[in-house]
Image 1 (cartoon, rainbow, N blue to C red):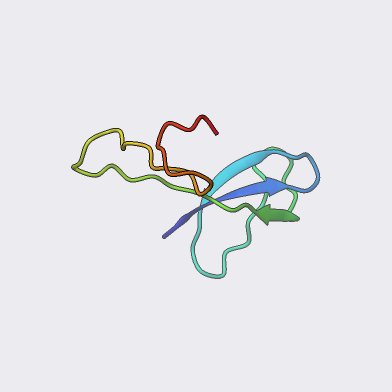
Image 2: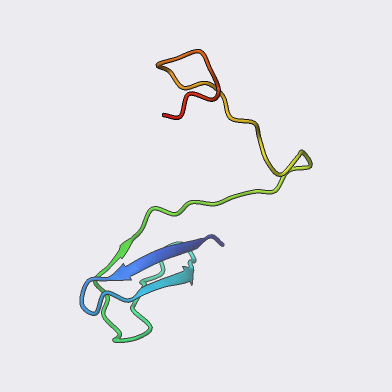
Amino acid sequence: MPIYEYKCQKCNKDFEELVREGQKIKCPKCGELKVIRKFSTFSSRGSGPDSVPASACSSCSSSDCGS
C-alpha cells in the first residue's frame, strides 16, 4: 500500500495517508472528504559518496563560473 501526501481543501491541513485501492480519504483534522493529493518527492540513499562534484553550467565551460 502506498503512502500519499494530501492537502485538505477546507482547513488546508497537510497530511499523509496509507492508501488502499478504492479507499475514500478524509482529513484527519476536520473530516472533510475534499482533499487534493499532492505531488510527492522521495530520496534514496546510495552506496556512493554523499556529495557529487558540481558540473559546468550550460553557459560556460568552467565548473567554477559563479552562476
